[in-house]
Length: 202
Image (cartoon, rainbow, N blue to C red; front, side):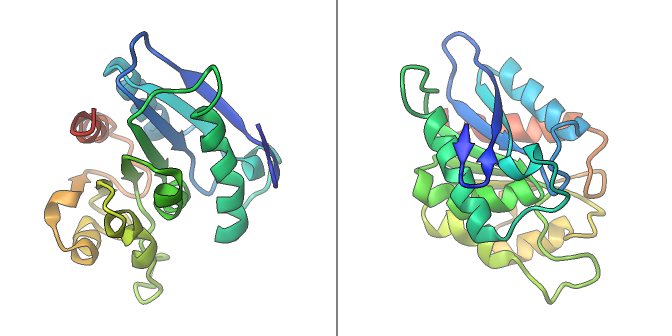
């Protein structure tokens, strides 16, 4: 898929009579190899959802860090729009999802893309040790647009604990705490939380 930053890749798994579509993307590593990311993909497909696992253009190009938010968003938008158009259009409802940096871009673009829900995996609320540098404004954007949001956060995540995330959202129901840090290695609770959230949208 062509974007302003070059080609992006989408790996689509589409069950027969899919219940909807989850567009899932990576964090700041730019890679799709994380066990937590792949476990969520597999769990959602097993639950009957089409999943497009997207490597963003900057990741395909081998860049070690994501671009600034504006160019990143401008290159993310056409990827999702392409998946939702044409003869091979993936069905709604549409859920945007990502790990860490991918959760940020999902939150920022949800309203413009007409998403029906946003699922954040390990949202990076702040850099480690710098709680005053908050990204809570990005996290709240879906809710401010009336879009359902859920965050799955590791109990010891240095980028923001579940308690810190709950404090920014105001309602503890928006957050599921699971064992782990920023990378969630025990994936069964993560997958359960992801499936429970999308089931409310299907």
